[in-house]
Image 1 (cartoon, rainbow, N blue to C red):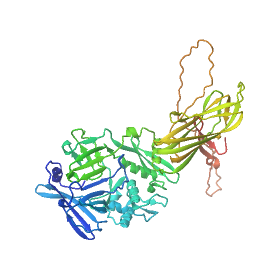
Image 2: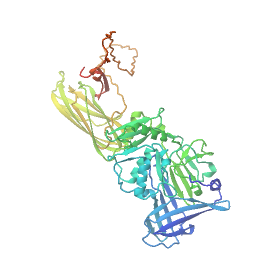
Image 3: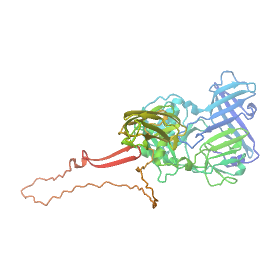
Image 4: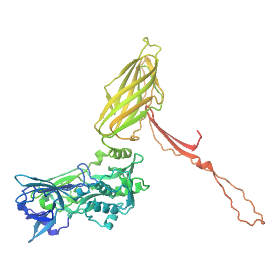
Amino acid sequence: MYEVSEQFREAAKSRALQMKIHIKLQINGTEYPLTESNVLQGSFSISNQNSESDNVEIGKVNIGELNITLINVALPRYSLKNARIEPSYSLLVGDRYESVPLGVYHVAEANRTSVGTEITAYDNMAKFDKVVGVTSAQGTMYDFTVLACEECGVDLGMTEDEMKVLPNGAELLNLYPSNDIETWRDLISWAAQTMGCFATMDRNGALVYRTYGIQSVDTLDEANRIEGARFSDFVTRYTGVSVVDIGKETTEYYGLEVDDGLTYPLGSNPFLQNTTRREELARNILTALSAIEYVPFEASLASSAMFYDLGDVLIFENGIADGTKRYCINQIDWTYGNAFTTTGVGQNPALVNARGKTDKALAGLSKTMEKDAYRIDVARNLKEVVCENKRIRRLIRTSVMTQKNAYVKIDAEILIDAKLDPTQLENKIIARVSYQLDSEIEERYPEETWCEGRHILKLMYLMTATDPGFHMFDIYLEMDGGSATIAPYDILVIFSGIGIVANAGWNGQIDIEEDVSHIQIPKMLLNSDPTSERVSIALQEPMRIGKEDLTPPFEIPEMVKENLTDTVGIGDYMSGMTWEEAAAYTWGASRELYVWGRKGEK
């Protein structure tokens, strides 16, 4: 919040307001002072935000925008490009006017109409849209920020000490050549995320980093909301973060002890790559994110309330507000003489993250992948599959993780050894295939007729995924007239297309399957008691292997004077111990085997 007097804040909430605006327009060194008489009524507006419309974010570097139509002023033609605009407004407080600056902007576009000169201008954040001039370096966030400001001609509105107290602000970090930084604004964005902040321009046109806090700057009652308000019935909060390791193409997840909130995807943050301290740095960011406990809202205030800034925390009371929760300003839309619309965004943790930690980590990975990248994923069977006559057998269960609006082609090639049933009168075997995508059985039934022998079954399926996440794909085979045997690795399923997340890993689902043979029911009344079955999972720890060696006492003759040293060594006994994990997907179950023993032993 811009520092104004207590009298100003009270006057801004009153019904009777006396306001006026002042605009300094500088064109090629010449200043044109403008007032309300030079502004078309309802045309002067400013908008900015630190988060998109779906959730509270860190690392944002949005550009503030000013729109205005100037009238009753003669401006030189073809000279407004990059002209400097410094607007402010004043409010009558007692017997004097108190002024509030509204920022520094530079004209990006100007159009002359019969009404006046329409101008669109942006704040100094736009100056960082220059190709970055450094690919690898080492320094603190202050060092990187100073370099960016010097290269782009922008003032830094913070001292080194002020930046050092921010999360990871005092850390000496490396920037490696393998990164996706293209402009200085990209670098500022990653720096802000590393410090758990968002970056914006202050009212003097200087770059500042701001953190989300818990201390409210003001309390507003129902009378201050001129056009009503809308308040969500949940609190947005973060309890976990995920980080993508570019080199390993994996993702790492870190959560609080009580992890029941949203997960923030830090993506492929270049300052968190190639470091052994990734977890420490990520948890520092998580600590900053844990301060976010805000209720999403939208409230229209009087135009005189433009002294509030992005990131300010407010308390709303009376009316439909409860007066206890915190509301953070993430978006502002101000029109002089009309209203100051403030918006707080956020998602409901109960709806978004009803998932496990594995899903949260994979969600973080999916948000960092290229939207239009063409990828291929492969799955095979690790166990023999036998489909008897007159039976339907699932050949393979596969999974693929996709982004929103993914287009995936599924090709399968299956090598089958078909055996004719001895009781079969006709010398042919009919094989029918069916698919199941997620929980829906697809109405597609490819069918082939075989003789006894080895055959290659080729299948193709097109999938359109409108929702991001894991999708399970099953292939079923029904045999009529004979049986089919498929050896290990003879089922090959290939996923290819746009929107596939590479190396998605395990989807967090455990499948347990039991095969029951045919039950012959005699022609008699069958009474059966109810049956039940229980499945339990327990953690088994390997037995520790120790080795002891007892040496009996011995005497040293007096004639020996030299120092003696006794050394006991274990040699290769312990160095040969290994901990191995073998995990594989079979056609119907996920099996894991842990082995603890010496190398080379079975």
